[in-house]
Length: 245
Image (cartoon, rainbow, N blue to C red):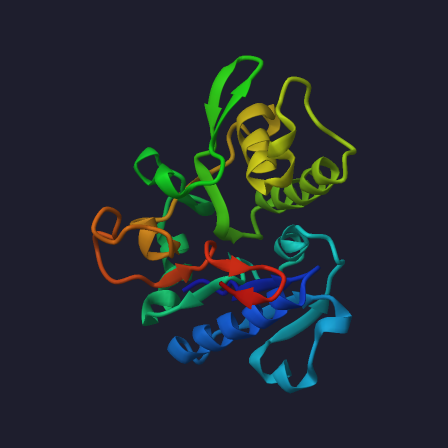
């Protein structure tokens, strides 16, 4: 039996609604997995002491819009599941994620951006100086092993590159500006363009629709194969400034 620590990382920054979503997500994790260890990264001004008992740790982060990568890089757990906070857990299989990572042949697992689901994506296919390209990995949910040195280095570089990209400190020639807002682009760049990560041992979590089911999907067209939804992702239909539409 592994003695590696396990836990979930949630990050709220920039907008108060992200903090509210994080509280809802933490409560939903604990509803189905009462023994879960959860670390919250948020801005200090957001935090309300009455919520402290929900978390194993509470750490401060910057107000950067993509501070999610700070939290990922600073995870206190060996085996970590990062979840975007505009999600909600709705099945007890949330507790199985760390065993899934152990049993996989990978050090890092994502959900996928596939052709048949592209009808809900805001921006996936794009032109490059070398030709057509597309995002295939979704960073909304991620399982990873921080004890693997290259994984720890990768997550830290993903954070750094995302911030430099969004803060206009780095951008490759020939790519459209609209991609700058996506941490999917920095993820794509590192996994597709950087030689140092060509052997990064990552994969797609089995039946990933169970783990990252977008609320905009048409259930009759797009649904999991092996069981009910575990994590529902409310990426569409939310005003990130504060109101449900």
